[in-house]
Figure 1 (cartoon, rainbow, N blue to C red):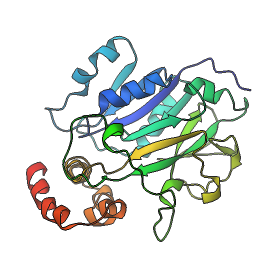
Figure 2 (cartoon, rainbow, N blue to C red; figure 1 turned 180 degrees about the vertical axis):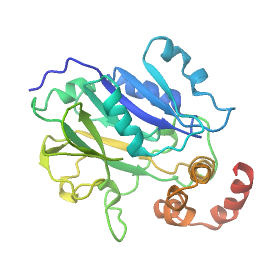
Figure 3 (cartoon, helix red, strand yellow; figure 1 turned 135 degrees about the vertical axis):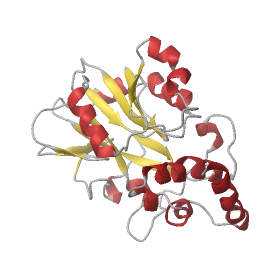
Length: 274
């Protein structure tokens, strides 16, 4: 099995969604990641992650890369990170995604079960909706939203939980690195150490989805208030393709039940945060 001598790190963009930064940081450090790199993409001066995370920064467990008030896209940030930061393994996730290990005490132990030649591990999502919560509640996101979508939840085109993020070993050579995967001549493996072929750049075949060993808990909307405050505000400030992606109808109600209360609150939250 493979030896891991270098750092195992997290790379994560952050914008308008800072209530859970301490929880996120503690979660990944407790899993044995050596360091977390946050791309600070906030455009609100009242939000200062450096103040929230100062103790972790002082102990070199967190580094913040200044991306404030700049247009951000996943591919640019991931390629910048892959070429410019020193690490052995990196997990690219967003700040609403929490890795869960079911059979191993930490990520180093998990990675040691893969052969030396393995460089790409696809970890599938387990999606969480609003759990019928309209308002932000103070606390840990993993405690507030406890019920995931059913495992077989699907749209016309895909099963929700077939979506992946990648745990990648630093390599040289020619490759294409996008928002979810790295494409080169080497094979992908799923969390069960099974060689797989990606169905698309961002998801895997349903029969290769696994929750036995590891998966990512994706809190993709949280409450309606948080969705407006974080996702819709982010899309509006980016003024790009994300404006249609993070839409109430095509995104929020894709994961959550439509109710009269939610319909009535949408405009109130939009007026408050936008």
